[in-house]
Every structure is written in structure tokens, then in C-alpha cells.
Length: 588
Image 1: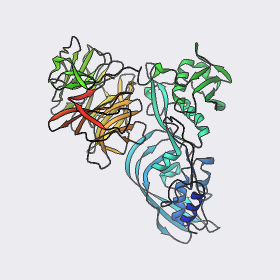
Image 2: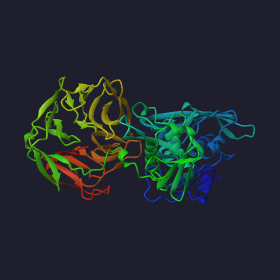
Image 3: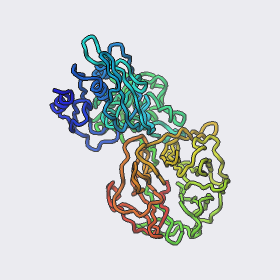
């Protein structure tokens, strides 16, 4: 029996899901029952059971089997270690650094002698996951080499690992989908009320251990990327105690060490509730500190995971009426698909509007895009005034963006430089942000998240419009930087909006597609997905808000229209483009 047939036989005997055309892909795959209403951290559980090396396998098969076995975290990668010689050092750790490949070519034996061999592996890198779980998109070709030798028993084993694997893993995207879970950890914004999600990828050995792994990651604190911008309520040194997190009859018990006594029960409970709600098997939870059940004042000892809504990263739920530029050029509210003018003084003078969270003011650009305008929404007039003029020839401003504190943001950009401007409060002039991480790039769009801590931008990187995520630090001056690419799948982006705290709505092109379409893009690095179906004309702008339909401003045959989905709650519902308007926006 050949090595391929051996692996296929083992896989088929254990409910292998899929064919054996590219094995060894890790042996058996066991699928668990999907949880109803699963949130991001608890997708249907698919467990990969790795195959141990066989004595007749050559160098290429050994490397292929090793890489497949690396996707299993059982017993500290015990099966993957069987592919290594006794002297080969490999320390991936419980939360390893991971190089994520789109796929891997079949390992190529480039040199084979009686007792030694060299095997080369090529692939297209999508990005990396660091030990904290932070994903960074970074597409580029990858080529690594493995050294192998024959043992005294005459079998091949890996004797030398490439740098990418010595202290980490080299996994395909499908490996990561099986072995990791995308999850959010929640920390506090500087206002000490608003929670900010920190998206990570969490290794998953089994479903039963996931609650403890998730809480342990929360106690470890935010990733180094987000850490300067947020705060945790858990005192230093706080850890899980005893069994850590136990779950029974939909109720989880979180037992923390005595250090937690110094923390705020209210704020720690908010962080835990929002983190645990991602696990659908948990409906309620209770907190113990050093074995004693505790609860915030006025709160039952067993708390619903859906409590602490006042700390919602997206702000308090509210009815979000969309605004557009109507056919006559006036700022209008969109009521039953009909634009109703609310500021006639804007006729033909305002483009890409943004309405302040308190509905008192509107900002936008002039039609040429080289001036930032603002006006008070009083008595339907909105007398516009210029807040900023482009300071450099050929520069343009990005559509303005408000945050929940009432700050107004825009980026002035040329083909190779950019400057971030912020107006801290109404009545003050905009000022240039001194610490701006994209100063050497052209920026096509910039949107601050509703939590006020994160910002998404479309950045020109080597001629490719790339979606990136940055963080805002308000300490010793404003610092907006540390931008990370969000996705390797999407290119040619032209506009974006925050749909909710974990997802962007983006107009762009997937891979080599020539048509610009709307996509939902998880900011934590998950798989992007298309939105809606049917003809859109030429998409130009996009607007989104939690629990509201995504709106797209389009142009077709010199006619501008706004499109919405026929059934907004169905992701692939058909687009309907019959609203005579342009530049849709939501006030938050």
C-alpha cells in the first residue's frame, strides 16, 4: 500500500470529510454538531486527528505529514514530534506564531542521498498570527527548506527546520480554519465605559477547554498592537484558579485568583460577559474570587451573558435614519426610500456628508473634494462654512468621520503623502495630528470605529488599495498609527464603512476580479464574504450601521442612485437601485 493510500484509508475509516487528492492533509477529520446561533468564537467544531509517519515514507512524504500534523494541538503536537529526529529542537508553544499560507505545493525533494535529504516547500503567504493571536495580512511568496536524515532504524526524520517553523507553525488557511477560532477579547476605552474588541485567533484543542482558553487570553491582556489604547479592569497577576472555568446547564463559573479582589467587580463583569457571550452554550455565568462567589452591587450572583449592554462597543441601540444627497443636491433624510430634504442650504454644495452623533451639525466635502465644510442643522438651512482648505496642490480630503465623543476627522492626501486632521470639539479649528502612521502613503478613505479607539483606512500600497486597521491613543497628544493590513483577499478598495464593531462593509475587488462589489470584511482577519446580488451599476460609496441595511451610492448612465438590499437581513438578497440620491451615510 502506498503512503497516499495508507493515509486515505485511515482518514476514510474515521469519517474523513473530503477526498484524498492532496493528502497527507492530517488524517482524520471529525465534525461535531454545530451549536445553534453560533457566534464567532464557536464555529462548528472540526477536529483533525493527525497520522503518524510510516516506515516506508520518503523525505517528501515525511515533510508533508509533519506539516499536516502541525495543525493538531493534541498533547502538545505529539504526533508532529514523531516526524522529528530526537535531536531536533522545536518549540511552538501553546500559542505559537503561525505563518498562514493560501495553500502549499507538494513538497519537492531537491537533494537525496543515502542518509540525508533536502526538501523544499513553496506557497503563497496570506499573513501571520503572532503568539498573542494578532493576525496581520502580509501576502508574499514563501519558500522554505527542511533537512532530513535516516535514523539507525533506516526511517526518514526531520533533522533541520526552517526559521519559520523553529518556534512556530507553517499552516494553510484551511488548517487555521480547523485548528483556530477567531474570537474577540474586550477591554475598556479611555472613557472607562466603552468596551473595545481585540480580535485574536485562539488555538483550539477541544471544545470543552474553549471557555477557559478564552478567559485566560482575556486575563493575559490586549495584544501589543491595541495595548496602548485600552485598559483592562483585571489587576496585575490575576489568573484562573483551580479548574478555571466550569460549565454546567448553560451556566459558566469563572474562578479567579485573589488578586482580582483589588479590581472593580462591575468593570471585570462587563469584560467577562462580553467575552463569554461568544460561546452559545453559555447563557449565564457567575464570578468567584479565590473560591468565593461575588457579584457587583445590585446584580444577581448569576449574570446573563447579555447583560452590560451599556458598554456596547457600537453604542446604545438606536433607530438609524440614513441621510443622502437628494436629486436636487440637498442633504436629505431617507424615509421609506424617498429622500426628504432637511437642509436646503446645501443644494449642490455638499458631497459625502457626515451627520454628527447629536444631529446638530453636518460635515462634508465640496464637490471638488479639496475643502472640508460644516454647517449647523438649524431650521433646515445648514449654512455651510469652510473648516479646511487643501494645503497642497492636488490634495484632496477623505470623507469626514465623526467619533462618539464628537471629534471630526479627515485625511488630506496627495499621491504619496497624507496628513490627518481632527477637530476636537465644535467651535474649535481642526488641527493636524502630529503622530500619524500613514504619513508616507496616499489615503483614500478613513473611518473611526464607534468605540473611538480603532480606525479603518484604505491605503495605497505599491499601487494597490489596501484595507488597514489602526488604533488611536489619546495620551500626551493624539497618536493614530500601528496600521495593520486586514485582508489579503481584497484589493482595489474604493470606500468603506463600519457595519458593526467587528465588521467593515467595503467596496472593492476580490483577488483578480475586475468588478467593484460590496464585501463584508471581519477586522480580526477572518474570511471576507460578498454582500447582495444583482446589478449595481458603478458603485462609488458605501454606508453601514448595526442592524441597518447597507446602502451603496452608484452611478449609471450619468444617473446617480442609492441601492439597498430587497431583504436587508439576508446577506445575498438582491440589490434594488431605485432611490434617486447619492452619497448615503448613517449618523454613527
